[in-house]
Length: 168
Image (tube, rainbow, N blue to C red; front, side):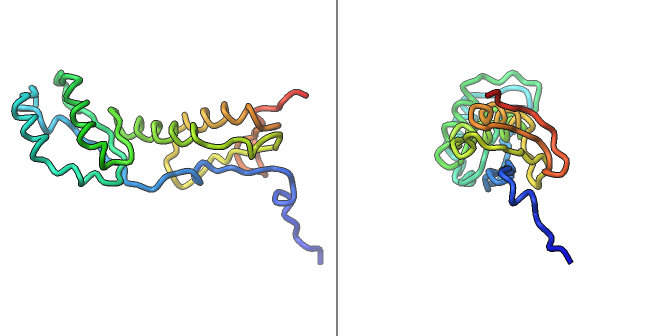
């Protein structure tokens, strides 16, 4: 009987899953709507009292997006003040929803990756994973990877889609 050979492992193809870069840490939203008087108006004196009394350490190690789910007009300084109190504890703080938060997290990760290990290599970027990786992260990763890789494919080794081939 012939031995089963994994041709993908024996090839010069590097498989990359963005799941490998997914950072641990709870993602939470802070909705400033909870601080609005009657759900409509931010009263500065009440808001500043809340800021001083709140225990911001509950955001320790978390990724935080600050939103306002109400149609109220909230001054920008309120978001800035909240962020300044949450930031010392959180891994990351942004003004935006969970999707925007996830994109910001991956923007930071991709900007710090060392792509030199992909220099002149054939790379396949795996698409399906267990984490909610933003689609924009795949685009950003591919754009940066193009400066290094010889070939870029997407999908699985058995059924990949060619994306990029460096001209000699």
